[in-house]
Image (tube, rainbow, N blue to C red):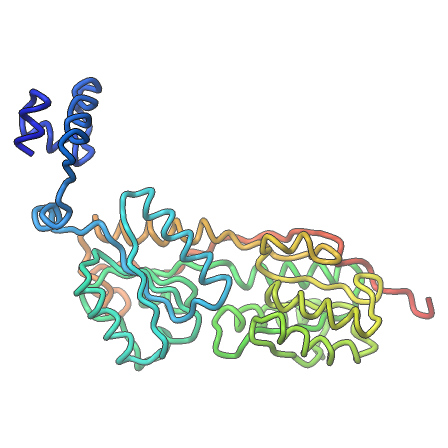
Length: 343
């Protein structure tokens, strides 16, 4: 730093302010210092800065699955938002969702020097009494039902499912079938519960049997072969777009036209949904906003100097509760009024 100051003709303090991105430095002086840095090949020592400031400018991310579109897009949004705030992201996938694995993940992230942690949930883990976050760790959780104990950011799963089912009922369909995600998924549970509740609110008390997949297009195809045999099925709400893709293939192979015979609504609004045949009506999730709010939330907790989440509501003044990111229904050509009997 002293060498840069000598070449640039400024004080070491000015070099420090420029290298740390502080305001209040004349623009000409800033350019002069940056030119000296390039000339000398100077790079700030991040380890030394971390020791001095007490922070590493790195957020840890623990996730229990990288196989689902939602987790991948949420992770991408978190990394983008963190970079915008000047933070790097350290990813630690956990293969087996157990208390020992979770504690081990937090220990490893501690060794890797992170300032706080974002946990992306795909299974009912933090909701289980046997699993808790270590004390003193600033945490935000995505996709969980643990808002009484942690700061949670999630898509409005129930709201999106209600919009999908209401859309089909308003088109005139007497009932709506549901191709759900796996039982251990919080998102799948929320969407299935909202499907059933929306039918009941509309007076459809005897809902069709729930059919399950595993989020994959192949599972949607297998389930679709079964649904295609149900002659009275005219509308299906599918818990994600990948399974909807498999369902569309199965209906086509069995001679059930979409939307003339069966209307289909998905969930996610993946980029390819508009290119399905027919283009898929679906529920749009704002993954970018979920990621931004996760980063914003954990940075706010860090800057406010909280004591971390302890697993007990209200203890130590920690911030708890769930922030829901709204969804919107994207209408395309896979939905229409039901076929006229005898046509």
